[in-house]
Length: 429
Image 1 (cartoon, rainbow, N blue to C red):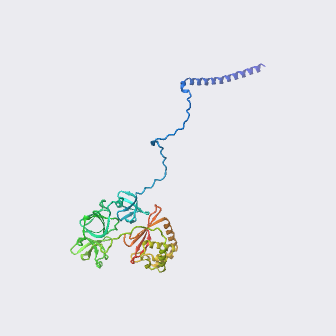
Image 2: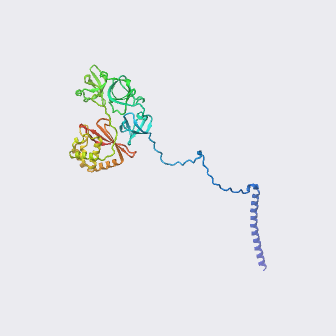
Image 3: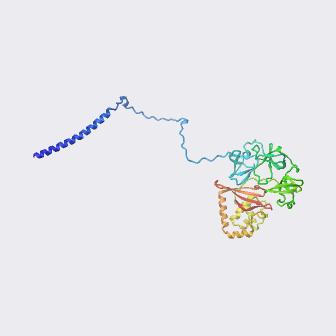
């Protein structure tokens, strides 16, 4: 009994100790909290008084112009440059192709879109055909003085004559005394001249001041032609070669000719004036070929020509007509007519008829390849033709891609001795 009492008392003492331990821990926490609250400065009563919540009133406010919201920029591509408008030209002028490997004559009878102006040059556009010309030729004011085209006449350079690409341009070169020029345009105190270039063809206009030229005098001319029949005397000169005098002795001239040729000739074999029997070459206007299919009249002419392929049926047809005949023969797989439309003769590389037929047998798929090529070109390009391109017997068809990333292609035609347009053998480039 006594043992039970002792055990119970011992358990009670342990429980009381444990309870006291936990009460002590909680008391310490209360003291710490109270000591922290004692350090907080009480706020004035006004600061904690609840303010009434204002009633929301509908209002309309217009921000001042300077505070208008700025639109968020997008990543849309930049707009292309706007053209400067459509203008006529003061006169015809050679335009150097925007891709540099071709040129065309921009004629005054057309209106051209001016795409941009850079320094003194303007980029013009005709149905996708683009080229650079001096901006001076753009006629922006109807009251501007006109360039007058005149019947060509011959003049001689008196002293050295400065050359300009257009009136008022920076001087580019000079003619020597005795140079023979052919005047064909006039503008105020200036004249535009044609001249013989013995190194390369002339592109563009060349202007000199009227005062630097003198009337024609054969004794002062330092340029001319080799006399007919005289070429047999000289190894490097051909019949009617144009020549210029470099030096002279008592009875001979040292002359230059095209291709870097230098020769000594008798004075009696020199004929003054290199433009004798040489009319001024003038290109025709650009013409868009709107429809590549043959008209009813052209279809009839083509059918008659295909019967016996007599060139007399092609007389009077334009380069554009012959080009369309070429396309028709291609799609009809009319190989004999295709061969007949090619230009032949000395100086051209057209093969013989036998070689042509042999090549067809060697590559029997060539017809299908040509059809596929021209089918694609017809769908994705526009076509512009110009006759008398660079020279009187040459015409080109510009094949202008709708995809601006692609290059313009050029198709060549030539006039044969009978005055009929024919297709070059390697026509497409």
